[in-house]
Amino acid sequence: MVQERYPWSYYTQTELVIGVFSRWRVGINWGELADFMLGWCNLDFFKDDLKIKEMMDIIQEKQREAEETQPVIIDLSK
Image 1 (cartoon, helix red, strand yellow):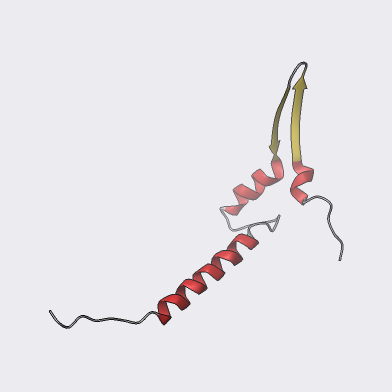
Image 2: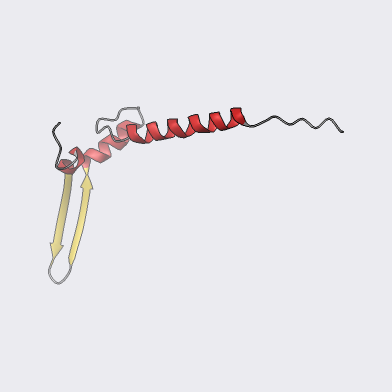
């Protein structure tokens, strides 16, 4: 298994740094911007949104299991 030193989004970062007495840094990550825009079409080429989807699926499954195990109480006294 090959371990990556940096994620792929690291290589698409563009920054401008200006400094004399203090430093100002302005940048944009073109890869993350494209990943965000294509995410609206369900495309994820950095594969970073899959982890979030997997966690959301696990949470929804646990909620379904909790709903199934709760007893149903019907009040017939009225």
